[in-house]
Image (cartoon, rainbow, N blue to C red; front, top):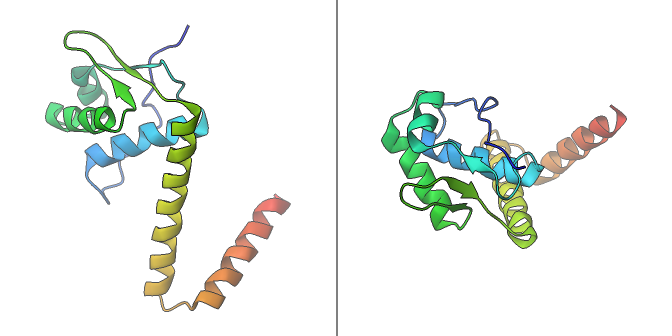
Length: 131
């Protein structure tokens, strides 16, 4: 039986709007396999109480997930995460591209050249493989 999505690991960071952080949390959960297709999302009211956010914030996040085809909701009924393997792969590509873009911009703003950035990333990659 598929259960209720847990938001225990959700930690707002203040760098982007909370509704986008909720959307990102669900997407990362899908990509990592922590959120399975068919899992139930807490009600908007419960989600806002769990996270300590305005109910409109929870509603906006859910609406965005619905628009992306990740959440299926019916009035007065439960909401479920739904995705295909193709959608999961597309989310993986999206999240990786966003992360790489953000890291590249941070390095560029620090004055790091492309060659230096590649060396830094290669070193970090190799150090991670040793652990």
